[in-house]
Length: 103
Image 1 (spheres, rainbow, N blue to C red):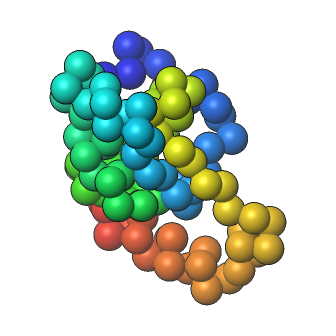
Image 2 (tube, helix red, strand yellow; image 1 turned 90 degrees about the horizontal axis):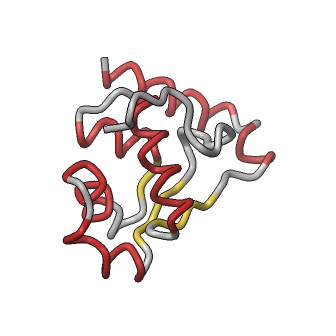
């Protein structure tokens, strides 16, 4: 899936970053490997990297690598959280509960 890589091409990609399929990704959908195609399909509706991992049953690190690859190719758009959001304790608690539910 990741060609043995454990770090995404963008190692700053947050698990709470919002991912949405782009027009380019929709057009390339049928030519992509299974996992990447599934991410493009899932992200027709905006979801976080953590939600992508949970929905596909992937380790969060694998999801980060795949999403970062798709973003680098222009197949998905990534909206990064602002610093204000990153300091929102209720959001951090929701992310933690979501990650615990993945286990």
